[in-house]
Length: 286
Image: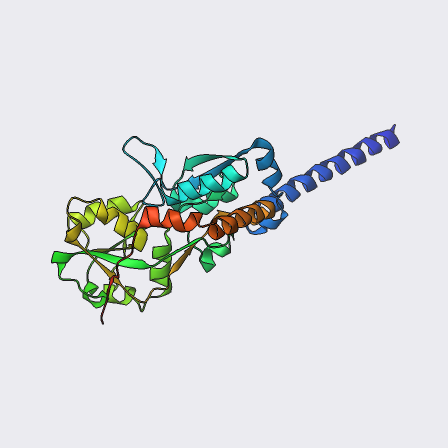
């Protein structure tokens, strides 16, 4: 009888530690820093013929809603073309852009494709496609502000989108613009349209933003000539598609299609449609 009880106890303990081990393994695999241990989702995506892409739906002209609420933009057209070629339907999902990498790595979305810029900090969390578009950062000001150069922002208030590449570059290269803010923190916005509203109301003095967004937004204002765009020494940004580090198959498929669309002129035609000609910005003088 005692031997039988011992056997039951031993078996129970073995089963207990076995399940504890399984739970521990699951936790380790789910850690954000161990994405390589996760399964590649490309087979699932191909099987379901659907992929979910996260975006900030106010980011003109990359991905935004028209007056009827339909999603349009450069990245919308490009992503739809890529996945149409692959026989996959795109499901667009609006997300909090400050939580974009978390949304991706928890599996709520499969990709980030919305003027998503390649940075060393982001490279720690996600994998990138090849770059498909480049843009420079520009400082947008009202012409009546008297701001003609970056140094004129001394003591002024700067608007920026929280979690954007512009915020990253501002902090990573403080000698370009941040040093002139005299210790004032940039005002953070969850979307750039709100920053432009405050600029128009003179609640802030300037906005640091991608040139493409700035030109598109200004072009669609009642008085486009009210604004000035100043360039500085920020390096051009490289737009890429963000994906989980484990999704190697998906990465190869996207890169293959981007190469094809670059070679056949589709991307160049798309840039001309959405961005148009790029007149030279005024170079800021220190």
